[in-house]
Image (cartoon, rainbow, N blue to C red; front, side, top):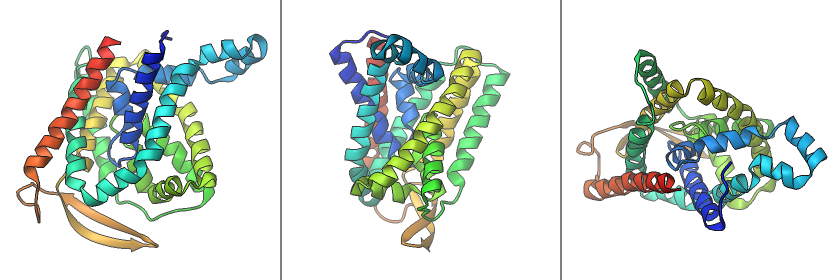
Length: 304
């Protein structure tokens, strides 16, 4: 665990805010931001510190020692940033997706393209196995993006499950937790709960997320410890496959009314085949900005 000063913890919080901003967009993964910003493996390792032995340390050696073993300052700073971002940006992101879809998708498309390059370069040795993992990851992520979304489901047990499944996706680069919520049909319910500060729904989803996080982080740590190159190749594939979801120009094929929710089924089209103003020049600028944001994050991580 790193020894950080106050300024460095503020930087961790800012990285958490970037993760939170990504996590509220269906198709973009906060895990990608964590990886690029250099905190991914520390995050996974810190989450894995939450176990029975931590309670033993707390009982025998006190709060200070347990907090240190947990890497509590890091987790507190990071999740504070994620929480601030999710609570403050959920409404803004929803508005942008509704009113400025080409611009926000272009920004994230550029961001993800840069992520592919930077995560892919972490693979130290390419082989038939790593290439297979890359292709498998891309196909899995692509398939997920083609699944039709479900209608809204409001039962508390299902929302608990949604939180558990989505958080597993959120910590995987390239797999969008928000999009998983869309597929499960609980995205709107959870976003509305955040807007309206529905503490019951937020608590149930939160407990589900904690359960999923503690379970899945152990698998990820094992994969990094034993098959790091394969894991990195797989994660790079996940990010490549996610590009299908965040392509900025789409044509609506079908609109469905499920309860109070309107769901659209669409397909990707060329900007030149887009019906309406394709905003191509501004979209390219937004994509370049997104691309540069990732390199700034990576440069910041390299200097830490």
